Amino acid sequence: MASVGAPKASEEAKSTFRLLVVSSDTYPPTRVDVSVLFGEELARSGHRIDWILQSADACEKPYTAEWGGGRVWVGATDLGTRLVHRLRKHFRSLLNDLRVFARCRSREYDIVEVKDKFIAGLFAVLASRLFKVRFVYWLSWPFPEQYLTQARDGTARYPILYLIRGSIFKFLLYRILLPSADHVFVQSAQMRKDVAAEGIPLPKLTAVPMGIKLSTFSQNRSGASQPYIPEGERSILYLGILVKVRRIDFLVRVLALVRKEIPDAKLYLVGRGEDPSDEQVLVAEAERLGILPAVVFTGQLPWVEALEYVQQAEVCVSPFYPIPILNSTSPTKLVEYMAMGRPVVANDHPEQRLLIEESGAGFCVPWDEEAFARAIVDLMKDPQRAREMGERGPPYVAKHREYSIIARLVEREMLRISGSGHSLGGPGAARGNR
Image (cartoon, rainbow, N blue to C red; front, side):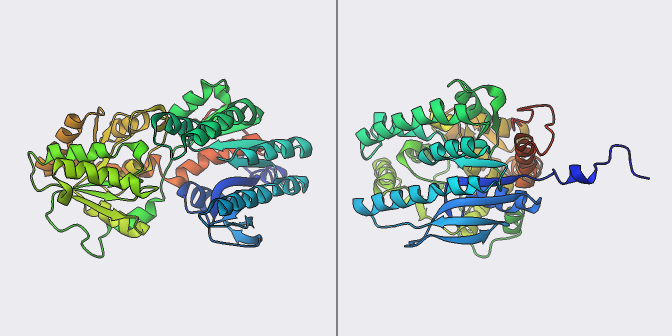
């Protein structure tokens, strides 16, 4: 006998959505919030997801490819560094983005989503209205605010251009794109509040935090293939981009304080800046303090190798300079450290505070060099406590930040938006504010 409430065949046919994504990511996608969340988890559930992306490699002609169970319309690009090449690259990107009209006209999709693009967002708004397709915007980073901040604090290479671009993008985002969207996905609970403060209704916003594919980290935790950090070395590790806006020179000064109590401590910086001047700031600060030999610059590493550095580090750190554009982020590095079972020290930041308080996997301290150094020293002097904190990370991440879990949140909202499913609790019921 069939169970009461079992779905009929017609209802089962409504359990998937058809999505077209126009994204600032390039092909093939490398960010896990695309490659894993969409390309693996949502695709595995039977949802059809097609893409309009620009090629990551030099490419003179557009082409189509199969990826993540869907089709990708890959646009040509130009990787030259001269102005004419950069303009050609942007022009080719716009040409490829115009495909959104033909794709929406095909009536093959329930939803068209734009991720972190502005002119393409205008194309998608028009196409969605013309061809009666739902329009969703995905904002992973406060780009307009970043450009404006860099223009004002002197970190932009061309301040006037950044000011113009930031102002235009802010107008497009908050006055046209987000008000026109049927729904908006943002990166964190704090970003949800920030976007709502710009006049976008809260029920229209869903926070989707960054996560990880836990199996990747479990494999690395089984043992490093070689010792990247000498055994027994007192090591502090930062994994991430070294751009000036993140004020990573803070960590150099923290290291100087740590070395007053642990003289042989070293700081490993795993990553690189966007241009040579980013790292030169760090070198100059280390030289000023007389600790340059204790700062190790690894450069950009293959992902597996970077994780092995994390695995071998004594303490991992996640400093986020407390300004609005960084407060709204969902830090991936902290989740990655926790997944690798490392004790962490992070500064007070909306999402970092939440993760540390809920997991107990480390210390969350103010953005203060003395406080940061004291927390690191405490972990280094109490290895048993450090080990216990590190062991709390993997089970927490598996329960709250694994992409198989996050995918269910996105799937539920997409089904509701597309009209192909039923919302659990109405619009915006699931917010990712774990």
